[in-house]
Amino acid sequence: MAEPLASLLLIFSILFTILNLALLTTAISSCGGTCRTLDDCDGQLICIKGRCSDDPSVGSSTCRTGSSPSRPSGSCRQFSTLNCKGKSYPTFQCSPTVTSSTPAILTNNDFSKGGDGGSPSECDGKFHNNSESVVALSTGWYARGSRCGQRIQIKASNGRSVVAKVVDECDSMNGCDSDHAGQPPCRNNIVDGSDAVWHALGLNIDVGEVKVTWSMA
Image (cartoon, rainbow, N blue to C red; front, top):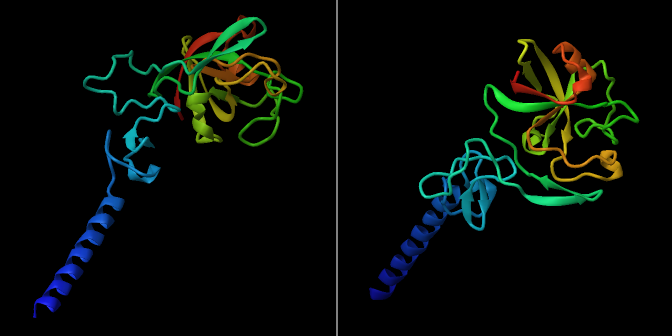
């Protein structure tokens, strides 16, 4: 009698263990929770060294509370430094947090063949005419191409605005090579607009840089 009872208890123990494992593998962890893959973490969190954490490539700040080091809202840490033509340039994987009115610096880019961008646009592998309202976004805002083809609204301080399509990355990690037409890495808060964007905003391209705000259109 003891032997069948022991076997029955063993079966129940195995079933209980399997059930617990199934629940653990389907659980969604929040900040600091245990994880094995990206799917184990909630929202924009990613799995880093077995714990759900903010994604440094997009500058998310979900977990930066409590005793975490204080930083200005929407900021992100410098990743490294790139030495180029005798100068040092900071590199960034992230950009300030995107809001309904995200501060940025508007620069000008020639998206046509032989223009400032060097290679074709990252999103579609094509060059674009300067009459098109298109932009490139800093690496963090480009978000690994997730904003490709999407439209953003750009507003200037003169009250004018324009809607432009995201077609390229303004690389904040690399530069000074043929792929980037010899240009240094972009800062992490750049909206690099075509001539059409500048004209629609009524801005003088010769100025070179203008403070603007942008949001998803």
